[in-house]
Amino acid sequence: MSGAVATAIEGVRRRIGRLRGSRKSAAFLANPLNVTGLVIVATVTVAAVVGPVVAPHDPASQDLAARLQPPSAAHPLGTDQLGRDVFSRLLHGARLSLGIAVVVTAIRLVVGTTIGLVAGYAGGWTDEFLMRLVDVQLAFPGLILALVIAGMLGPSLRNVMIALAVVGWGSYARVVRGSVLSTKERHFVDAARLMGVSRVRIAVRHLLPNVVSPVVVLATMNLGTVILGTAGLSFIGLGAQPPTPEWGTMLSAGRHHLRSAWWIANAPGAAIMLTVLGFNLLGDGLRDVLDPKHETKTADRP
Image (cartoon, rainbow, N blue to C red; front, top):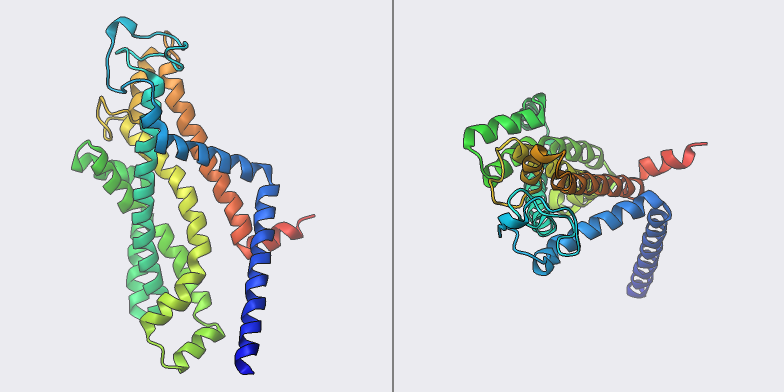
Protein backbone atom coordinates (compact mmCIF):
# COMPACT_ATOMS: atom_id res chain seq x y z
CA MET A 1 0.00 0.00 0.00
CA SER A 2 2.75 2.44 0.98
CA GLY A 3 4.58 1.57 -2.24
CA ALA A 4 1.52 2.44 -4.33
CA VAL A 5 1.11 5.75 -2.50
CA ALA A 6 4.77 6.60 -3.06
CA THR A 7 4.43 5.77 -6.77
CA ALA A 8 1.34 7.96 -7.08
CA ILE A 9 3.08 10.87 -5.32
CA GLU A 10 6.10 10.54 -7.58
CA GLY A 11 3.83 10.55 -10.65
CA VAL A 12 2.13 13.74 -9.48
CA ARG A 13 5.50 15.38 -8.88
CA ARG A 14 6.65 14.53 -12.39
CA ARG A 15 3.46 15.93 -13.93
CA ILE A 16 3.86 19.16 -11.93
CA GLY A 17 7.48 19.39 -13.05
CA ARG A 18 6.50 18.94 -16.70
CA LEU A 19 3.75 21.54 -16.33
CA ARG A 20 6.13 24.06 -14.79
CA GLY A 21 8.66 23.35 -17.51
CA SER A 22 6.09 23.94 -20.25
CA ARG A 23 4.96 27.19 -18.60
CA LYS A 24 8.54 28.43 -18.37
CA SER A 25 9.16 27.53 -22.00
CA ALA A 26 6.01 29.35 -23.05
CA ALA A 27 6.98 32.40 -20.99
CA PHE A 28 10.45 32.38 -22.53
CA LEU A 29 9.17 32.13 -26.10
CA ALA A 30 6.51 34.79 -25.48
CA ASN A 31 9.19 37.47 -25.26
CA PRO A 32 10.42 38.51 -28.74
CA LEU A 33 13.81 39.57 -27.34
CA ASN A 34 14.37 36.09 -25.95
CA VAL A 35 13.47 34.55 -29.30
CA THR A 36 15.79 36.99 -31.07
CA GLY A 37 18.68 36.01 -28.82
CA LEU A 38 17.93 32.32 -29.29
CA VAL A 39 17.83 32.68 -33.08
CA ILE A 40 21.12 34.59 -33.16
CA VAL A 41 22.89 32.07 -30.92
CA ALA A 42 21.48 29.15 -32.91
CA THR A 43 22.61 30.73 -36.18
CA VAL A 44 26.15 31.33 -34.89
CA THR A 45 26.29 27.78 -33.53
CA VAL A 46 25.21 26.30 -36.87
CA ALA A 47 27.75 28.49 -38.65
CA ALA A 48 30.47 27.31 -36.29
CA VAL A 49 29.57 23.64 -36.80
CA VAL A 50 28.93 23.45 -40.54
CA GLY A 51 30.42 26.72 -41.76
CA PRO A 52 33.95 25.48 -42.44
CA VAL A 53 32.47 22.54 -44.39
CA VAL A 54 30.25 24.66 -46.65
CA ALA A 55 32.61 27.64 -46.98
CA PRO A 56 32.99 28.40 -50.71
CA HIS A 57 36.74 29.16 -50.52
CA ASP A 58 39.86 28.28 -48.57
CA PRO A 59 40.15 30.97 -45.84
CA ALA A 60 43.93 31.16 -46.25
CA SER A 61 44.04 31.05 -50.07
CA GLN A 62 45.42 34.29 -51.49
CA ASP A 63 44.59 35.78 -54.88
CA LEU A 64 46.27 39.14 -55.25
CA ALA A 65 44.57 39.72 -58.60
CA ALA A 66 41.20 39.67 -56.77
CA ARG A 67 42.21 41.81 -53.77
CA LEU A 68 39.77 44.36 -52.31
CA GLN A 69 36.88 43.27 -54.49
CA PRO A 70 33.43 44.40 -53.28
CA PRO A 71 30.68 41.89 -52.41
CA SER A 72 29.57 39.87 -55.42
CA ALA A 73 28.07 36.50 -56.33
CA ALA A 74 31.49 34.86 -56.22
CA HIS A 75 32.44 36.58 -52.95
CA PRO A 76 29.28 37.41 -50.92
CA LEU A 77 31.23 39.60 -48.49
CA GLY A 78 34.00 40.67 -50.83
CA THR A 79 37.72 39.97 -50.56
CA ASP A 80 40.38 41.39 -48.26
CA GLN A 81 43.72 43.04 -48.95
CA LEU A 82 45.27 39.69 -49.92
CA GLY A 83 42.39 38.50 -52.09
CA ARG A 84 41.01 36.08 -49.49
CA ASP A 85 37.27 35.47 -49.35
CA VAL A 86 35.88 37.36 -46.33
CA PHE A 87 32.76 35.19 -46.07
CA SER A 88 34.78 31.97 -45.86
CA ARG A 89 37.08 33.50 -43.25
CA LEU A 90 34.06 34.67 -41.28
CA LEU A 91 32.61 31.14 -41.18
CA HIS A 92 35.91 29.62 -40.04
CA GLY A 93 36.22 32.40 -37.46
CA ALA A 94 32.82 31.51 -36.01
CA ARG A 95 34.07 28.04 -35.05
CA LEU A 96 37.25 29.50 -33.59
CA SER A 97 35.57 32.26 -31.58
CA LEU A 98 32.73 30.08 -30.28
CA GLY A 99 35.08 27.21 -29.44
CA ILE A 100 37.36 29.50 -27.42
CA ALA A 101 34.35 31.00 -25.62
CA VAL A 102 33.01 27.57 -24.65
CA VAL A 103 36.37 26.31 -23.36
CA VAL A 104 37.18 29.46 -21.39
CA THR A 105 33.67 29.66 -19.91
CA ALA A 106 33.80 25.98 -18.93
CA ILE A 107 37.10 26.52 -17.09
CA ARG A 108 35.73 29.58 -15.31
CA LEU A 109 32.57 27.71 -14.38
CA VAL A 110 34.33 24.64 -12.96
CA VAL A 111 36.94 26.61 -10.98
CA GLY A 112 34.54 29.26 -9.69
CA THR A 113 31.77 26.81 -8.82
CA THR A 114 34.17 24.54 -6.92
CA ILE A 115 35.65 27.41 -4.91
CA GLY A 116 32.24 28.95 -4.18
CA LEU A 117 30.78 25.59 -3.15
CA VAL A 118 33.66 24.81 -0.79
CA ALA A 119 33.71 28.31 0.69
CA GLY A 120 29.96 28.51 1.26
CA TYR A 121 29.57 25.05 2.77
CA ALA A 122 32.78 24.86 4.81
CA GLY A 123 32.55 28.34 6.29
CA GLY A 124 35.02 29.57 8.89
CA TRP A 125 38.62 30.27 7.93
CA THR A 126 38.22 28.33 4.67
CA ASP A 127 35.48 30.69 3.57
CA GLU A 128 37.49 33.74 4.62
CA PHE A 129 40.63 32.60 2.80
CA LEU A 130 38.89 31.66 -0.44
CA MET A 131 36.75 34.79 -0.54
CA ARG A 132 39.80 37.01 0.00
CA LEU A 133 41.33 35.34 -3.04
CA VAL A 134 38.16 36.16 -4.95
CA ASP A 135 38.31 39.78 -3.74
CA VAL A 136 41.91 40.08 -4.94
CA GLN A 137 40.98 38.63 -8.33
CA LEU A 138 37.97 40.94 -8.72
CA ALA A 139 39.95 43.99 -7.58
CA PHE A 140 41.69 44.16 -10.96
CA PRO A 141 39.82 45.19 -14.12
CA GLY A 142 39.31 41.92 -15.99
CA LEU A 143 40.38 43.03 -19.45
CA ILE A 144 43.43 44.90 -18.14
CA LEU A 145 44.56 41.88 -16.13
CA ALA A 146 44.01 39.61 -19.13
CA LEU A 147 46.03 42.05 -21.24
CA VAL A 148 48.93 41.89 -18.78
CA ILE A 149 48.85 38.08 -18.57
CA ALA A 150 48.61 37.63 -22.34
CA GLY A 151 51.42 40.14 -22.84
CA MET A 152 53.66 38.25 -20.42
CA LEU A 153 52.91 34.85 -21.95
CA GLY A 154 53.27 36.00 -25.55
CA PRO A 155 50.89 36.42 -28.49
CA SER A 156 48.88 33.28 -29.24
CA LEU A 157 45.30 32.07 -28.92
CA ARG A 158 46.28 29.54 -26.26
CA ASN A 159 47.75 32.28 -24.07
CA VAL A 160 44.65 34.42 -24.60
CA MET A 161 42.50 31.51 -23.43
CA ILE A 162 44.67 31.12 -20.33
CA ALA A 163 44.50 34.84 -19.59
CA LEU A 164 40.72 35.04 -19.97
CA ALA A 165 40.17 31.89 -17.90
CA VAL A 166 42.34 33.21 -15.05
CA VAL A 167 40.49 36.52 -14.72
CA GLY A 168 36.89 35.35 -14.94
CA TRP A 169 36.21 32.71 -12.29
CA GLY A 170 35.66 35.09 -9.35
CA SER A 171 32.11 36.05 -10.31
CA TYR A 172 31.10 32.36 -10.38
CA ALA A 173 32.59 31.82 -6.92
CA ARG A 174 30.61 34.70 -5.45
CA VAL A 175 27.31 33.67 -7.04
CA VAL A 176 27.68 30.03 -5.99
CA ARG A 177 28.77 30.92 -2.45
CA GLY A 178 25.73 33.16 -1.97
CA SER A 179 23.39 30.43 -3.18
CA VAL A 180 25.06 27.81 -0.97
CA LEU A 181 24.85 30.02 2.14
CA SER A 182 21.09 30.38 1.70
CA THR A 183 20.52 26.73 0.76
CA LYS A 184 22.58 24.95 3.41
CA GLU A 185 20.27 26.21 6.19
CA ARG A 186 17.18 24.61 4.68
CA HIS A 187 15.45 21.65 6.26
CA PHE A 188 16.37 19.01 3.68
CA VAL A 189 20.08 19.71 4.27
CA ASP A 190 19.57 19.39 8.05
CA ALA A 191 17.72 16.13 7.47
CA ALA A 192 20.60 14.79 5.37
CA ARG A 193 23.06 15.65 8.14
CA LEU A 194 20.93 13.88 10.74
CA MET A 195 20.82 10.80 8.52
CA GLY A 196 24.62 10.67 8.53
CA VAL A 197 25.13 11.69 4.90
CA SER A 198 28.74 12.74 4.28
CA ARG A 199 29.62 16.39 3.73
CA VAL A 200 30.85 15.71 0.21
CA ARG A 201 27.63 13.93 -0.74
CA ILE A 202 25.51 16.74 0.73
CA ALA A 203 27.48 19.32 -1.24
CA VAL A 204 27.25 17.40 -4.52
CA ARG A 205 23.77 15.90 -4.17
CA HIS A 206 21.84 18.63 -2.36
CA LEU A 207 23.67 21.95 -2.69
CA LEU A 208 25.12 21.82 -6.19
CA PRO A 209 21.77 21.32 -8.01
CA ASN A 210 20.42 24.46 -6.32
CA VAL A 211 23.13 26.69 -7.82
CA VAL A 212 22.65 25.50 -11.39
CA SER A 213 20.18 28.20 -12.43
CA PRO A 214 22.26 31.32 -11.59
CA VAL A 215 25.41 29.65 -12.91
CA VAL A 216 23.74 28.83 -16.25
CA VAL A 217 22.60 32.45 -16.63
CA LEU A 218 26.06 33.78 -15.77
CA ALA A 219 27.77 31.34 -18.13
CA THR A 220 25.46 32.29 -21.00
CA MET A 221 26.31 35.96 -20.62
CA ASN A 222 29.99 35.12 -20.14
CA LEU A 223 30.12 33.45 -23.55
CA GLY A 224 29.53 36.79 -25.23
CA THR A 225 32.03 38.51 -22.92
CA VAL A 226 34.74 35.97 -23.75
CA ILE A 227 34.14 36.37 -27.49
CA LEU A 228 34.47 40.13 -27.07
CA GLY A 229 37.62 39.77 -24.95
CA THR A 230 39.22 37.34 -27.41
CA ALA A 231 38.50 39.66 -30.31
CA GLY A 232 39.85 42.65 -28.38
CA LEU A 233 43.13 40.96 -27.49
CA SER A 234 43.52 39.66 -31.04
CA PHE A 235 42.79 43.14 -32.40
CA ILE A 236 45.85 44.56 -30.63
CA GLY A 237 48.04 41.63 -31.70
CA LEU A 238 48.09 39.46 -28.57
CA GLY A 239 45.72 36.75 -29.80
CA ALA A 240 45.45 34.94 -33.10
CA GLN A 241 48.23 35.67 -35.56
CA PRO A 242 47.80 35.98 -39.34
CA PRO A 243 46.65 34.17 -41.39
CA THR A 244 44.35 32.66 -38.72
CA PRO A 245 40.76 33.71 -39.57
CA GLU A 246 39.83 35.03 -36.14
CA TRP A 247 37.26 37.83 -35.97
CA GLY A 248 39.44 40.23 -33.97
CA THR A 249 42.40 39.71 -36.29
CA MET A 250 40.17 40.26 -39.33
CA LEU A 251 38.84 43.46 -37.78
CA SER A 252 42.37 44.68 -37.09
CA ALA A 253 43.49 44.03 -40.67
CA GLY A 254 40.40 45.72 -42.10
CA ARG A 255 40.77 48.97 -40.17
CA HIS A 256 43.42 50.13 -42.64
CA HIS A 257 40.93 49.91 -45.52
CA LEU A 258 37.80 51.45 -44.01
CA ARG A 259 37.48 54.04 -46.79
CA SER A 260 38.29 51.87 -49.79
CA ALA A 261 37.02 48.45 -48.63
CA TRP A 262 34.57 48.88 -45.74
CA TRP A 263 33.39 45.26 -45.89
CA ILE A 264 36.68 43.83 -44.58
CA ALA A 265 36.20 45.34 -41.12
CA ASN A 266 32.41 45.63 -41.07
CA ALA A 267 31.78 41.90 -41.60
CA PRO A 268 33.69 40.63 -38.52
CA GLY A 269 32.59 43.70 -36.54
CA ALA A 270 28.94 42.93 -37.23
CA ALA A 271 29.51 39.24 -36.40
CA ILE A 272 31.04 40.13 -33.02
CA MET A 273 28.28 42.62 -32.20
CA LEU A 274 25.42 40.30 -33.14
CA THR A 275 26.94 37.30 -31.34
CA VAL A 276 27.51 39.21 -28.10
CA LEU A 277 24.01 40.72 -28.37
CA GLY A 278 22.52 37.26 -28.91
CA PHE A 279 24.15 35.79 -25.82
CA ASN A 280 23.15 38.80 -23.71
CA LEU A 281 19.53 38.58 -24.81
CA LEU A 282 19.50 34.83 -24.24
CA GLY A 283 21.06 35.26 -20.80
CA ASP A 284 18.43 37.86 -19.82
CA GLY A 285 15.68 35.53 -20.97
CA LEU A 286 17.08 32.58 -19.04
CA ARG A 287 17.35 34.74 -15.92
CA ASP A 288 13.69 35.69 -16.18
CA VAL A 289 12.71 32.01 -16.47
CA LEU A 290 15.17 30.34 -14.10
CA ASP A 291 15.36 32.93 -11.30
CA PRO A 292 12.11 32.82 -9.28
CA LYS A 293 13.00 36.01 -7.37
CA HIS A 294 13.55 37.98 -10.56
CA GLU A 295 10.39 36.48 -12.05
CA THR A 296 8.38 37.60 -9.02
CA LYS A 297 9.79 41.13 -9.20
CA THR A 298 8.94 41.31 -12.89
CA ALA A 299 5.39 40.12 -12.27
CA ASP A 300 4.91 42.70 -9.50
CA ARG A 301 5.75 45.62 -11.76
CA PRO A 302 2.76 47.82 -12.71
